[in-house]
Length: 116
Length: 114
Image (cartoon, rainbow over all chains, first blue to last red; front, side, top):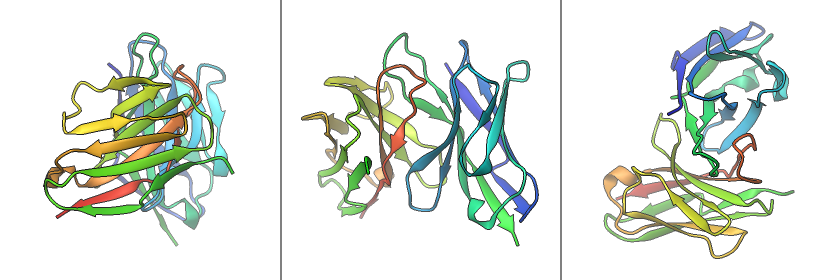
């Protein structure tokens, strides 16, 4: 079974500083990995996804993530934080069921706080 | 704009009183999912439809049912809500089966059980 671990339930950075949100996965097969963002009382919005093409994936809003197989990691970064980045971020891995339509297994989420 | 719509956004029901949450999509996607997200927790998959084929997660309580009368609509029925069923319910769609197709989420319905 696939699983995702997000290190740090809360991360606080200053506006303009580097954002680094950590995600490690466990998967018995090559994974498909996703980062989603959730603003209060809203659904999830896809930031970016890794589907076995380029290991460095660029997403929306200036975010990117690098897939590192040797470290089983898919950390999310942004060079310069903006106040509007404050939100909950979820890392997710696709569940493989042998060809069926698969759901996502989410990490517990990281609440990103931006200090002015 | 093509989108995933959930109604209502907020639903209050009484303990044990059946409730139905609805989801519609204009994306013409084959797959529709229902997730349960409790406060400060990750979304948890309840079940999904691939076209008309229903797929239930092994640990989804029997209290939760779903219907998909056509491609556009999918319903979540909670037959006898308990206090522990209070949560945000998220509907999502994806174009097709393979896992690399991204899922598009609706805004969610927040269910309160009194």
